[in-house]
Image (cartoon, rainbow, N blue to C red; front, side, top):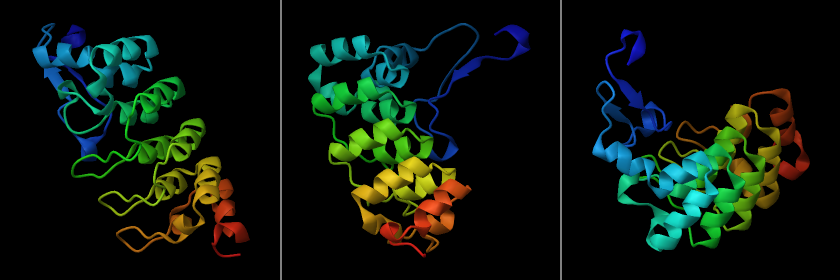
Length: 200
């Protein structure tokens, strides 16, 4: 690679705690077979928000809607689309039978967790309408509401609370509620509303 960097890497974006086989490295300009396979997968198309490509893949292989061998780890195409805020891709996947409550192995992250963490209000709304469970907890016992509150995504917090008021009382592994994790004045104010079930 130019600049003297010994090789390059394509990182899936899961982060160190969600590390998976999507993190692929290659030496120089060589591209691995796994890397090329991933680039042609439903997960890659969903990650890029490439709806036309995603539709073609699903037409050839409908089972890819809930993951394919090229994805590595256990993220599904819906995880990728939700995390990226790609609503059209999310719509296509849900209509094609994607499981809105698919959880990653080990971490237990759902598409709703990913969308809430990133503050993608439109995607969160669509996932909730499709039956995504707002009380689903990951390995840290964090719900999507914890994720949104931690990042200060007030509108996402409001959406989840409107859908599931009891989410306000969910506790993470350390015993903290979403209100206790909230950052930013707008998000904190959501939990002071009587409707939220939080402190007034």
